[in-house]
Amino acid sequence: MKPFFITTPIYYVNDKPHIGHAYTTILADVLARFHRNASEDVIFLTGLDEHGQKVQQAAERREIGPKAHCDEMALRFLDLWKKLYIKNDDFIRTTESRHISIVQTILQKVYDKGDIYEDEYEGLYSISEERFITEKEAESGQYRDIKKLKEKNYFFKMSKYQNKLINYINENPQFIQPEHRKNEVLGFLKKPLGDLCISRPKSRLSWGIDIPFDSNYVTYVWFDALINYISAIGYHSDNANFNKYWPADIHLIGKDILTTHAVYWPTILMSAELPLPKTIFAHGWWLHGESKMSKSVGNVVDPLELIKDYGVDPVRYYLMREMMLGNDANFTMESFIKRYNSDLANDFGNLLSRVSNLLVKFFDSRIPPFEDDSNEGKIIKKNGMQLAKQVLTQIELMKVNEAIEIIFQFIRSVNKYLEIMAPWKLVKSDIKQAGKVLFTAAEALRLSSELLSPVMPNRTSIVIKTLGVQKTSLDWGGLNPGNAIKKHDVLFPRIDINKFEEKKTSEKKSQLVNIITFDQFKNIEFKTAKILEAEKVDGADKLLKLQVEIKDQKRIIVSGIAEFYSTTELIGRIVIIITNLKPATIFGIESQGMILAAKEGKVLRIITIDNQKVESGSKVY
Ligand code: MSP
Image 1 (tube, rainbow, N blue to C red):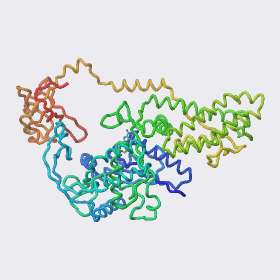
Image 2: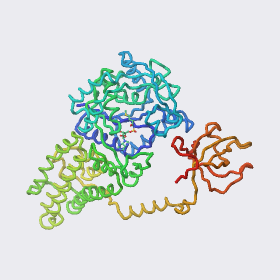
Image 3: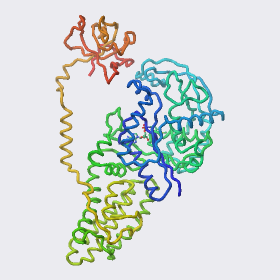
Image 4: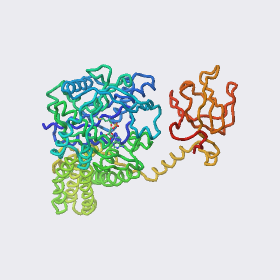
């Protein structure tokens, strides 16, 4: 059997999976299912990226160990993949020992070869961000606590492989796809390629894989993460398996991680003397309301909600049908419902109910014996005989949306054929011919369902069961005369657009509780203020007494932030306060205002606009 190895990126364990993540995994799943159906020996790998600063910090905030944190977060992905009917063959987590040991093996190999060197880096370091920032970033005023820092680190000689990589890309046109992404990478490689810093001192970050030749350092997350593609299939631990599946057939990625996959990864592999993956395919983004879906923008679509409301297959179908691979696509509920109702309920679902109802009513719930040899019937058969080849050609070209469209054109042509032949009338005048028409329509339906099964594994299996089909075949003629028709539920119940609109309106209304009018809002006065002094309040652990300056005026504010800030770190900060709040006496001190802060669980941060060239006393809108 021909091996076929396909991967998704490994997802950041901290993220709550959204439609964008679900898309990559469904796409890989659909491609893997097509290749399995073609009797290939498929390995479909996905997993989780679990090291790094953000994971360490999230665990600290939750006051649990980082591994325990990852174990809990991993469940969100595992649960979603199960609900989405993802049939992956392996699931790798970068905290597993099978991965850690291979990252260290590769690091040692590359180091022994002389491709890793130690160097001191001097740059601007933002303590709040915990990373080096550029001069431009520093000037933007968005970063606090900036200092010049000299740090020793390990660097991978990526630059050494620049020309070799350029040649490889030029000689292997299938390596980076689609074409415009290849050109993007070649454009990037026109500038001199720097070396890659692949270590982080443990004093700054401990949640990572130890560098084997220096225990004071851990591995940079990307160097760690990319290696999952070979650690999972047995590099250095199961050579037979590794040699069978490597190089990977497709690394499926989103366009935002093109450089890491098409530049970092190949140069690491070159240094480790391993072959490069056959294809890196970068798809576009799912946008929602014109911007990339992301938690910080707050425009994420939760796939679990969609599955709960409309079922898993329509979600898989929509994502696969709506995105032209390589381009961005816009997720809207309106287009989801439109696709659902027109393609799934009308075209596909309707074909099944027409055929099965007539067979139950007039043919004793059995598939009739002959196929239609009229001209119209022959055309359906001829197109049906070519269908699988056409569809699989599009899949080879990674044009899943077009493959689906070809199947739906066929389904629509069968519905038209039924309208022309009108077997519901024919049953009265020529029952034999009516049977032939229904046989041809049922066979066309069977074939379409088999071809759609990688996209919609659940509902297509209902069709297959209804038609009593036992053996899968992508050739015309797989339907057995005499098969008993089984009862089935409506394949895709129509979504009532009015009910959907009503639900949306009532949800909007429920979000509008506790609203204030613009006039009420206008009455609240927000201003910037500079903290001049801060001291603890006697007898109150949580309170600080702050003296703030609002332009040329001074005020006292008592604030419940003592647990979160030391008195010294507050001095000089520009904060936002409400100035026209009625004064309140707290622990005998009159507080003349309130400082704005954000609180989540056990974390509280005051809202500051330090370094923004804004003086105290400015009005805030
Ligand atoms: N952990 C890295 C990958 C390491 S692979 C060695 C990472 N993880 S991620 O969780 O942020 O993203 C995983 C994938 O989801 C990426 O391919 C990314 O492009 C994709 N998507 C995230 N949001 C997306 C959309 N809104 N639309 C489509 N795909 C998007 O990057």
